Image (cartoon, rainbow, N blue to C red):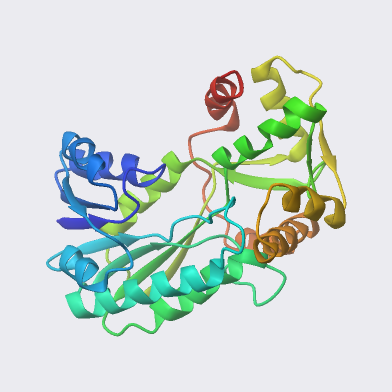
Length: 297
């Protein structure tokens, strides 16, 4: 098959490209950075260098593909006044227009746990909106991949661990949270993208392990030589103040605080547990080795 991937050589797209190439597919990887071309070609894939805001470029990159994988880039956390919803809406509408014009018939799109929610999901409402836009496409089979929290998001807690000696958020302590490795996400997408979905619209959750936040802290603490590491539960107001101290936009801060409050209440994972997937192969103890390398730099 001819398959086009967005996401450049990111945490999901790189292992996905490697796996698809190894399976004998012709893979094109879209990247905005010309310097990535050699690295993409070294994987055995083709490079399409251009901007996701350029619909003619996207249309050309999608044209002739048997299937495509789309993903919206993550937020710019350190950019004041960054309008996340406006950015995501623009990109997903670009995808929709390019998919229609290129006449692609099979799409796998990276969404998120919480995309089923109509309220209290914070920034994840952007993923719900993206699913809505893409679902309106005619004559296209679409699978929405809804991963849970990424292991590598735990890296954001490194400054707190070093400065205050603990992890802290408005979810934590004994809250049970599902986590996922990008490797397991890539494996799910690799299988799904070459499979026709008779349902026309399909949702798949992806998770690797379910752990309480204290269990997460214990595993990470053991990896970095802090066996007594704890995950403290703080108030929404305390978290908001901390985020704003990092220079994040108020809209983004509000979205993150609301999302994580929903994680604490359990509302965020209600649909996940109703449609729980088989857990993946990569466990937090495996990822903790990578976490420790970054922590010790």
